[in-house]
Amino acid sequence: MRARASKGTTLVDTRAGGVGAALLTAVVMYATFAGPLAAQDTFLTRCGAAVHQEEGTGWVSVPQGQIFCPLAADPKAERSYVSYLRGDFATIANAPSGQQTNIGAVGLGDSFALFRYAARRPGNGVQVDLAAAVFSQFNLDTKSFDLINADYLVGIPVTMRHGGFSARLRVYHQSSHLGDEFLLNNQPERVNLSFESVEAILSQEVGSLRIYGGGEAFFRREPADLASRLVHAGGELRPVIFGDGRVLLAFDYKLVDDGSWSYAWNARAGLELARVPTPGHPPRIITIIVDWYEGTAPYGQFYRDDIRYFGVGFNLSR
Image (cartoon, rainbow, N blue to C red; front, top):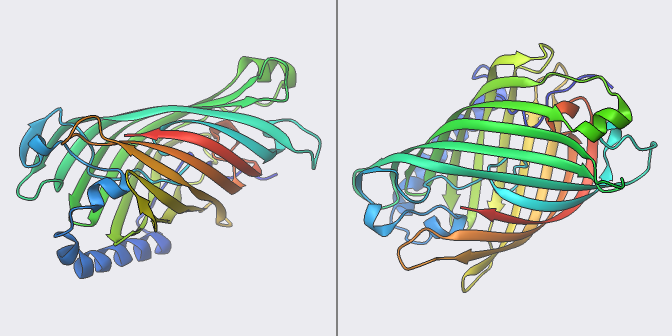
């Protein structure tokens, strides 16, 4: 199978026509909808981003909360989760062709706010964070649940919000490592996968609908045959709200320029349950989800593989 860029290795080059179109669409939507949405009071908690009521305006160091909502269906979003996956994982599970494999996926991730400035409306402003995550996959069909792969990410996202429009500019590093048991049992060709990337994502909320678009570009990558850019887009719909809960429908799509524009998509449905520790605090969002994924693998060491799986999981996001 030919080499393809990892979906965890998300990339953008502003020369890409698809990226330019996505950015232009988001800017047009901002100009059209930002005014009316600025008057809304519910979008902050609906998508999961909110700030402490006493830190809504002015300059705040080490603030609480976020102003850019996590991308709900992005497999590489910085969140903590545990998932059960079943499907065709190619060489990831080293199973015979056509045989279904059971995988356990675990992630630990969060974003720590360093400072934020908001001039007028609470929840608007510009914020700088320090974010980190680790994503690991385990083969549940082996006796010791062998660790297959682990991806480590650390980055500095700069986010902004004005009404229903938000954006994220992020520079981050990723390195990926195979598990000891997988190495001993399979003796694979190891790839020293490591890269830095710059990402730009624009997001617009219109009622219960959120759409986003942008992409990423590598400025250092190993191995050298990793693709240099990708386009990233998606949408989220929360059509039903009941008390502190809501229904979530989300879709994430990545298109990688690896010579033939490889793709990967993830569709997600579930229930989001918000917990507010005390009045005025940002919520913690617990999500029970079902996933369907198809395309190039989001696991760094296996960026050459095409996979397909169905999964259920439990997510915790800020």
